[in-house]
Length: 173
Image (cartoon, rainbow, N blue to C red):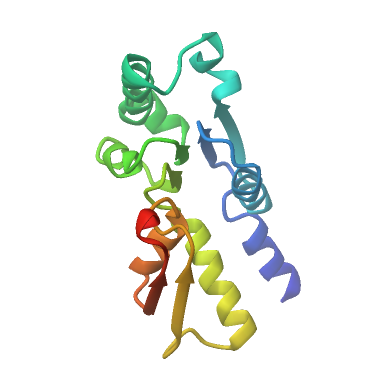
């Protein structure tokens, strides 16, 4: 029985390839996704600012940003990537870009953070931690304190549907 469960857990993604696209530096998030995919038996191909056109001097500002974003959408909508990649993980500094990119993506796209917009995977980890520590998230009242304007995890946590109170200064709301 143990061997069967072990094989199921660690071969779930065997033969699958995840494209990890991190235009925003996030060591913990990037490593977490890579480790998870590899533990499930899959492979990971990384792309970040050091291995893309950003290294040649393009920025994520203005016209360069538009070029880079068009390239990312081309990757998602390219029939070759449809056959090569099985899923995409995208972290980028552009607010709400992941939602727009998902409209062009033929495979699952996981939002690993987009500017100050959202960070749903971190929010899920926060809820998991609360559940592990307290035993439940049902019926809890949670208070968020700090920078609510730029805190993308807070934006994602608020969508998960518990009773939240938000405490911040007016300049950070």
